[in-house]
Amino acid sequence: MSVSVEEVRHVADLANLELTAEELPRMAKDLNAVLGYIAQLNELDTSAVEPMAQVGEALGLKPAREGETLRGDSVRTSIERDAVMAEAPETDGRFFKVPRVIER
Image (cartoon, rainbow, N blue to C red; front, side):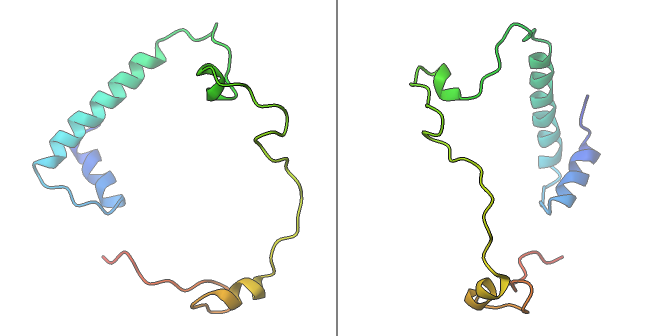
């Protein structure tokens, strides 16, 4: 898979990024290098590698006992919308109002 300069321009527009004419081909080259490296990684045979649940164990850290570091899932009632909206600096009663940050 290869990323074209036109695709970089399109994604930059979607992300509201301003890339110069000089940056577009450099970004395409960098993205293609990343994709090439990922393609190399995808060629590796990982069928004999055990799945890891906690990266810390691979680093030699003591494995956590059940419930020691992770809290259990439990169903709890959420805060009432009126109470949350009462604390908001600006609201329309249903949603928070925030300043516009993207202008086109």
